[in-house]
Length: 508
Image (cartoon, rainbow, N blue to C red; front, side):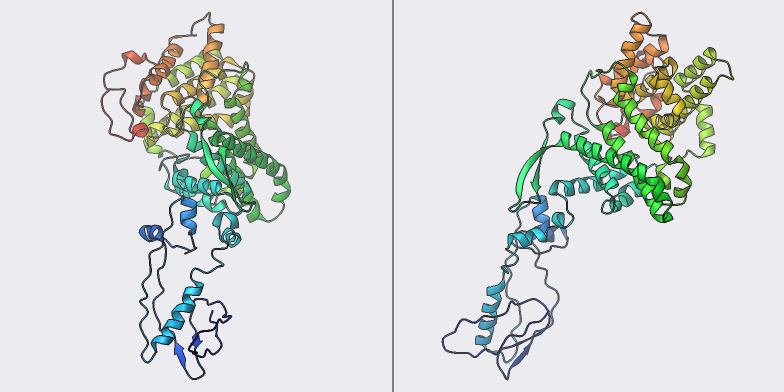
């Protein structure tokens, strides 16, 4: 935008003038009636702060601090600019002095130093979020692609790392689910007692001047998760009406609901839990069962609409990458999972082939077995946790578990054991799985005179205890030996897991 200034005479003694504010931009500046000076063309100046220049990112050049430095807490320093503007032929030194004085009067511009306007220029203010929430968004962008999988599927990885953050600005469901996952991830590698003492700086965006304060990260993570579940319940009740409307909009709402549910449930799973936290007396009171119930409700509610998402960007959130058929056949032929064979034989010995309960148990064991094969094939432990998700889809199995059916609890015991033995480094071991294990250990003692039902139960829990005493992860290929006494496995079977430590496997 250009701005003309009234003709200025050059008196011997300069007088004060009420000049209009100068704005940068092309245009003409008239200094007298007969002289017109055209601004020389030049490349756009790069007047950003030193931090932005070093990172080669765009600086919004706010004074005294730019937006990047405000949100990163760095000291904002602008380089001293030399006057490199070439002298125009025929221009007197007096004219240059007047021009320099005018520029000095407007740099830095008073409007930039105005605190309310700085607030209006703030990214977090414009987005109606706090600085802390903006940091949570950046945190998710850093780790989101690996939250549910580790490069198992390029399509799924792209969806969680790129597509989900794009939904943040248009969906409260995804926004609070994302906040929940990010805040839980920040706490995931702390033990429970330490996690309760972590505080984060925040600020009240609605106050002026902005009032800084601190928040307890664990309490805030729980609030985000509860808010997400509240929104999920609200949208679930509204969805049938919404489905009668625009098809594309219905697809988005359904997809966002499932994304939000995965984020919220995932955050609950990875939040640190206290050791020896078996404070419930019934399975249905456990956090694990509550999360399974929420997942089952979401699946049952929207399974009838799943065809809507078949050919959309949300299709990849239902099932992970499948093992190629030929490779799966080789796994089944060459990998003998002793604990799976034991569970199948256990069920066959207890029930007739036509028994409905037997079908439910066998279905759960088959899902469990396939997750173990995925773990070995893709070399990631998230598939073991997904076994619980697959099993949860069966309402009959969930009802059996709620009623503390022994075989249903036994299958869950084995699944939780594997999650504890081969847990992923993304979260602490003292989580929802170990709570259930403590419950089952006490249940087994009461049911079997202070001991275990059989040697396989004793052996698999021995693996849990062995892993608890190690500072390294077990190699995932050791799955085929689980169920045997851990102290009698062949030398070299228990090796440091590359998945858990990020270093090359070595002999145990």
